Amino acid sequence: MNAVLELRDARKTYPGSPPVESIRGVSLAVRGGELAAVVGPSGSGKSTLLNLATGLDRPTSGSVRIAGEPIERLSDRRLAGLRAYRIGVVFQQFHLLPQLSALDNVATGLLYRGVPAGRRRADAAEALSRVGLAHRAHQRARTLSGGEQQRVAIARALVGRPPILFADEPTGNLDSANGAEVLGLLRRLNVEGTTIVVITHSDEVAGAARRKITLRDGLVAHDTGSTA
Amino acid sequence: MSLLPRLRVTDLLTVATVGLRTRPARAALSVLGVGIGIAALVAVLGITRSSQSDLLARIDRLGTNLLTVADGQGPGGEEQPLPATAAGGVSLTTGVLASAPTAELPGVTVRRTDRVPPAQSGGLAVRAADASLLAVLDGRLTHGTFLTEGTARFPVTVLGHTAAQRLGVEDLSGDPRVFVAGHWYTVIGVLAPLDLAPEVDRSALVGFAAAVRDFGHDGAASRIYVRARQDRTVEVATMLARAANPERPDEVAVSRPSDALTARLAVADSGTALFLGLGAVALLVGGVGIANMMVIAVLERRTEIGLRRALGAGRRHVAGQFLLESLLLGAAGGVTGALLGAAATYALAVQRGWQPLVPPSAVGLALAAACLVGAVAGLYPALRAARLTPTDALRTG
Image 1 (cartoon, each protein chain N blue to C red):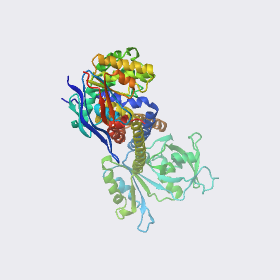
Image 2: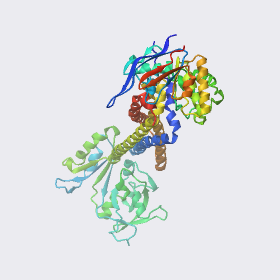
Image 3: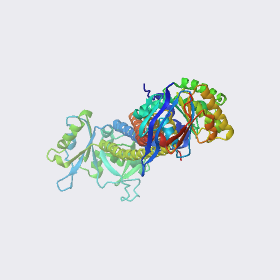
């Protein structure tokens, strides 16, 4: 199977004095169906890797291909299109719109594809049942528990059925029970066929993944290797 | 194949109102700012238009074809009486429909009784007039009759509206008499107010024959009222001086009393410009208020902006969202202001007894101005929001 995500000697330097080289030549490929964990101490370049892999930022040099598209060559608008159609992201802080219902939050995942509202809501309802929250569909996001909010965020990332899903410290803001529940959900989704990359410094989360990529000082220190 | 992000217009509208729905009080205050400016503009235009239409209606009713020919000034500034032939000359001028001579009787006072000292004339004058005056002035009597050819010789008088009030003549019951410079005159009529001839309001009118007999008047007119053909009023006005005094036309004062009312229209216009300026300043301040609120909103909603970018929103979608939100605030201010302004116009017009008139063009312009102010106010915040990189926007704290 082709790589869904492929980095070749990707580097990212942030301007400053002296300039900070956050990742210094990372090469790796994630294939469809994988569940990979990117681990490493803080400052190792995890967040930068996530920004590049999710198309939120471009590499200073080297190449980052998402679903076959080299993002360093895409215009800002096409990069936004790539995020709308090809990438799902789950954040540590959930980033739900608190005044909207769970269903409307999930439907937002299709907003920038120009999908009509009725279709969006129908797909959102389906995604909510995949994460086991159909019964909370019409509750406002801010009234949900942390675990429920993160599951709504996962449903939002999934609703457009992107080829790859990124999760940035998905259990970082949750207690252990809710964390375990979210982790179980991610594993189940992977079993059902979703390609998932989790960025984490939690051993528990990393242990749930079949592949573990360790970053240190902006370089891949260890990679258990592709399993798919 | 690359796919481009898309946002439906209906969805843009929903997205643009998220901020307004989340913070209704703040939105309402911003709306109020613009609303006050728009209300001021609409009310100023509405009130001026209503009062002007009232003034125009009065001018129409009174007619702009009334002219007066009066004693003028000589080369040294001294008063020059009209020649005795003036009345005849004026009445023969082409374009003159009717004319009525009057003569102020200098030194002749009118008093309630002979016990009132002559110095207390109450600002009232005694004028000689003939029967034609009522028709030329288009006047009306509130009581009694006007002077006629028959009564002009007798010691009778018709009082102007103000004169009747000052002399305490409320009606003609009991045949009231007034004391005119040593002679008792019976009041036979009282005039309604005359907008175009306020000097007549303050006069006691007597017949020319009585004036000659009792007060030694020479019978010459000092002020002649003229009704000209409406379409030739201006032309007639230029000819009257020569007609009244062919030898010294520049010693005759010709005027058009309705000009005073027309001048009030111009005065009202210049006042309008001032208030419109103030309204525009208020609108501008309202716009700054919206801009301020939008800048704060962009700062507060950085994370939301980042999230939307992560979900695939392009810069244009983020800019559009904030620009439309700002424009909607301006438009809401416009609608609120137009309603407030119309209500103020209506209230004042009803209170003053005018026909309320809110010009639709003013409302349309005000709404357009409000939308423009909203859009311009939103431009900078929208660009700031669009310029945020997704990673910066998502970096919290």
